[in-house]
Image 1 (cartoon, helix red, strand yellow):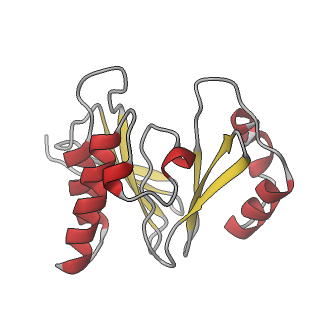
Image 2 (cartoon, rainbow, N blue to C red):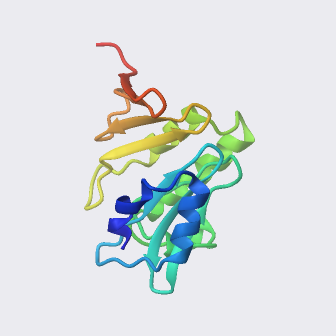
Length: 168
């Protein structure tokens, strides 16, 4: 199941090994549907169970992958204006903001955090509890909790440290 991915994923050494393993198994889950995201130095992917089998969403080469709290398979290959369901407004905003970033300064961790801040849900059934950006160059994460983008944490996977990126 998607929930049991953690039990075997630590035995695999690379993002390609994880992806190959997921392609060999049939993911299943009960409601609510969830997805798992895996990051490596040069690629990322999200996977979830769908009615038609495993759904895998790959990042662009050395690129970014946007996931929010809705079923990814329902929106595969749809233009943003055709996406409807929980989180659809935030999805459209994210797609627009990513395109703006690509066309101006380029996509980077700071632009990704701004996009997450603009798309964080503060109400409804799907409030954003955690937002994070994986930075492949440094194998680190920028993380905020409860939509508080003033208090950001940096998690270094190589140094195994967590540091606060604010004063006070």
